[in-house]
Image 1: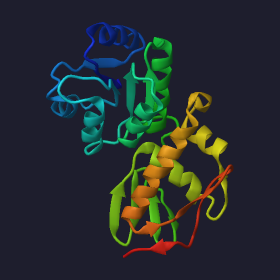
Image 2 (image 1 turned 120 degrees about the horizontal axis):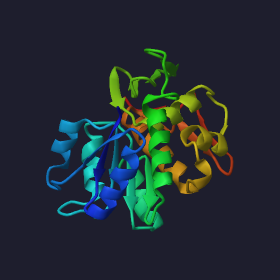
Image 3 (image 1 turned 45 degrees about the vertical axis):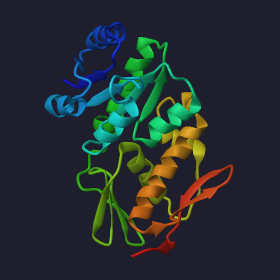
Image 4 (image 1 turned 60 degrees about the vertical axis):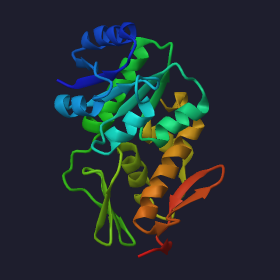
Length: 233
């Protein structure tokens, strides 16, 4: 049974979500110690986290960064803050999705199921030890790892899916709509800037491995990964 962890300081909202999500067979745990979110995460080992922005002591952006240091599980923000920059900051700090309040429980459940499928289920990849390589850069999609020159770095599910699609078509332009379709089931509801954020995060990971400029933007069309780029040892 997949476990959902809710980090929300409004008991009415957390109870509403718990009641609705549990009806569909999920186990739900609600965070109560807002100074010990990371400890509870380690203890409960949830498959997915629902996270508010405005929390006591530390905000949701802080806890998202802390969770990303130890896990690649899907993290969905649910917040009353509707500003585009709040959504961008959430994604830059490692979130996989952002839902604004007020929300429909049906939409939250659909997104939970979508992200669980991507991360662990039907679309998660079943072939062990798959790998794609280009110019000394190797992606291990099932392990969510990227390697170059003996150095490995962890990826989120969406960063891995983005790189996988690009590396399957080296030197070819992959359109934005195809990328959105692969990364999100319901991409028509995804802000166009969301893809830009994930490309930026993926480029940062590539830069850490010395693959500078590996992903090229084709303005108004999409992106491509090149088999030649500036490198740093």
